[in-house]
Image (cartoon, rainbow, N blue to C red):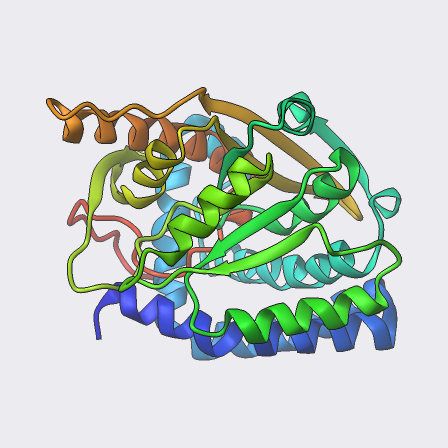
Length: 322
């Protein structure tokens, strides 16, 4: 099994069950108690996940090499930092349920760049939003409620119907409608998702995708980018999709800043992605690097909220083990 297949299969096995378990904890005990109860679950995955621990330590050490990252970590990364990294992930799952079952007024949101989404709703032009496994992409649910924009999430999953059904059940429990958020399945052997995304954009809606992981397939189309002092692979697919949709491309990240408090940044990555026949690969590399630069900047703000617990880097450098 390849590294990419490993993360993909893990997400397939865990996504639906995580949503169900998180929803049960949140509804049964409330958000504060759910955060307490998630600690032993995190401890179990920390104790049994040696590969994830190594990946976390490697990432944190790279962050520490940057002066901004070093200030946040406040010391050379050790296993206690790794556990805090795992714990931040567990907390994010509980908060995820709050995003779906609560309302925007339940959270203190500091939003920068929300005017970009307002413009989508006003002009009816549609947009592609690129997110990542940094922070909480589910904050799109709150922004969709506030900006009156319908959000369609492209997801590499064979179980989109099951996840949509879960969202429908959550919607029946939520205090605000979830009808503005839908999941569009992406399959590597089909272009149906491109047609669906085009229809959404033509209706003036937002199409959102996590753009920091390559999809599982036999042939990968990645760009090697500079990232946190090393090299990493960013998939070309989201940028090829953006070029086909001929719409504005936004970068979005939502970082937890406290109890029920998030800082959300929405930035214009490009008003339109253009891929000329001559120099296409160079153009793709430039767009991927632009995305990676923004991602790295926010990683240094909140390093524990990076939730890629696998060997993300491609520079062949392995940091020393504990």
